[in-house]
Image (tube, rainbow, N blue to C red):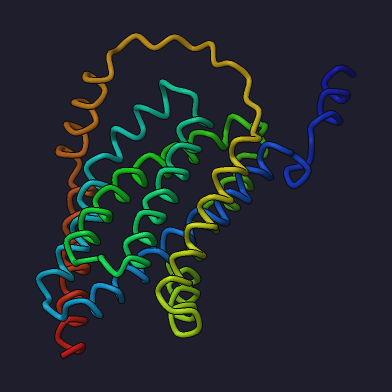
Length: 249
């Protein structure tokens, strides 16, 4: 009888306030990243058609993100996840504000874009692991599969919807417009996330962050599947950028 009563008290997934806030934040955050990225790529091409700078922009955004994903997971396990996600979204929005100021001053250069891309990649490295670890904290166990499918949906449509939206905004509003929209999207994500209410975590952590980080890198190095995926990703992105640079000439 108690089990039946408890089951009736489970909040439906789309009426779960915390999950709804997390989902809405993801709807703003993930596409916002790609809106910024497509804007930065086209701005780089407008500043300099040298393929070296275009490749540097990609590597500056990708390498820190790839290397720090493990650290992002460690931070997600040890600190307040809502706060980490809020800082990640807010810091990316503030980086876009810096870029907008440079645009308005007509002072932006290729190296500004590369430096901001690196900082953007660092901040982004903490977003994805935290979202994944937040989902089981705001849902019941029997709702996890459906909840994860909603979150993964935002991650899967963002690489398509984000660049499409960004390209349209560049054509209609120009570079200042596209970066303003990306900034607003990330600010909206940070504001949404801050209203999530979590219960204090009671699970003690024994190992140190440094030990966890070393173990994560050791596991990735031993796992052939991970190494293959990373190598393939680098090759595909390099080939894509090479073709873009060739076609732009």
